[in-house]
Amino acid sequence: MTEESRLREDITRFAKSLFDRGLTCGASGNISARLSDGTLLVTPTGRSMGFLDPGRISHLAADLTLLDGDKPTKEIPLHSAFYSTRAATGAVVHLHSTHSVALSMLPDTDPDSALPPLTSYAIMRLGKVKLLPFFLPGDPAMGEAVRGLSGRRSAVLLANHGPVVAGKDLEAAVFAMEELEETAKLALLMRGIQGIQLTGSQIADTVARFNVDWN
Image 1 (cartoon, one colour):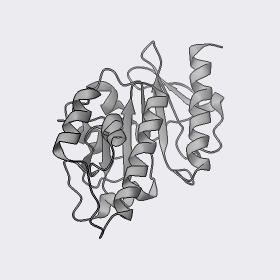
Image 2 (tube, helix red, strand yellow):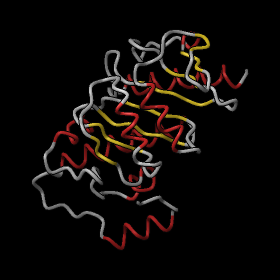
Image 3 (tube, helix red, strand yellow):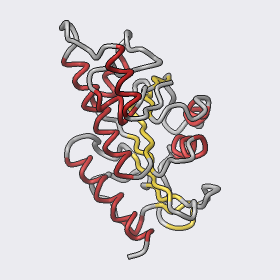
């Protein structure tokens, strides 16, 4: 099996897993992954992530022109911003997952660090998550907002829209996205309760031990 064929199958498999577990619904959400030649495989626009055809996944050149497959998601500017600002990015996942979207709408969510420090795993896999303002779906300004972070964040939360996570490969991006959604769920469950968050020293120890970018 070629690298491209394997990655097409992996995107389809992970997308179905996310869909089957209710982390994305309808035709929402999109995934991209970078091949070793610099081209991208991207989920098509208007397609449910639970019913993708590997052969119809969009294949884009490095300049984002369509090489083959169906028309790609309209969120290409969002994905390309991570690839252009974080050289180690091998995949990007964007969902409309319920708890993350809910967290993005709360007035007291910290724009610079949207996820409270509840577990070491969220810190390890995500670092700080930046809350970005609302943009219309497909607005190229979303990509510009990500570029404005100059590669400092691997994950952002789009207000009233959903999370976007970049990872070194597809598996890492999906696992980090799952961690983001579960941490958002925990944060909502703990609202109104005097829960014990990680202390500053515990956060610092996690950052140092696992070499986390905590800017």
